[in-house]
Image (cartoon, rainbow, N blue to C red):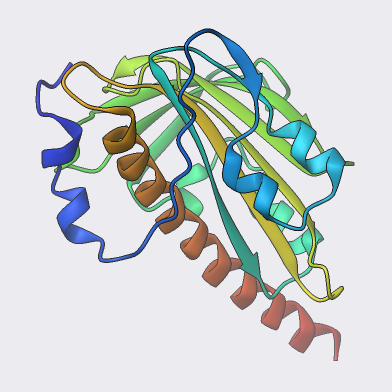
Length: 213
């Protein structure tokens, strides 16, 4: 695995964006949701989906993104486990290596150059088309994010217009990095991904509206 510390990654210099970080400090394994989720007006069922087992050397955080597009439109992009690079622009390719897109499917993604990673093998843990929940875990590859697990949920915005996307994760803090540094790094990537998702889904919604009018 690359020896570069996360805090020295060029990614942190490329993206000039503020990120809200919630770090869970745990003395033992606990099942908890990121503390910044508790400050959001989200349904209890959504909060429960973002409950993670957090170990003493792990951090847990969440990023929220509002999108001016229907849940069905946003979900059509998010649920494609075989095509994450559609909105995750730090990925240059994805190949399904096992499975048919259902739970248990394995994919291998390759990362763009300049990041402290080369590739990642990821397993689809949850794909719930009714509740709009997707979860995956990292099970191998050349990277520094060990024991990474992510949960993404979609629900209708409180005003009834648009979608709220909430993505939470738990991950080991690599040797040489604090939990805070790790969460700042991962939050930056997740926030950039969700901003890209918003742009793509909103453009798709506009096209759908024009075609139906």
